[in-house]
Length: 84
Image (cartoon, rainbow, N blue to C red; front, top):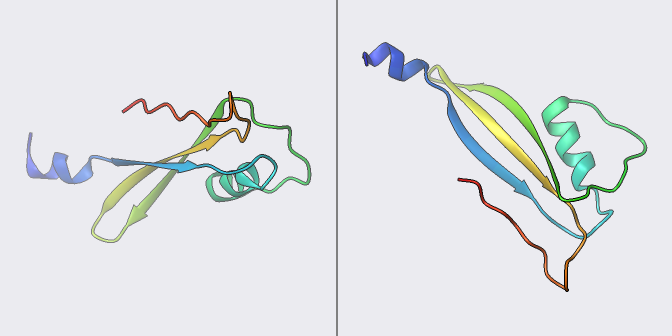
């Protein structure tokens, strides 16, 4: 692989948004990733995720995975599943 191909590869970062139910996690994730804002949302069951591609100085392209984890608890614990 040449240097130019390595420079053009996207980097990926995962951002996980966690918190109590109905505290605004989905609003925050939607506003950031989709540049949209709604007045009403349904409760997130399990998880939802969004992608946001950004360009940084130095010709670096980054894909952000924004994971919106539902605020419900199972047996008093919040479970986070890491796919990496």
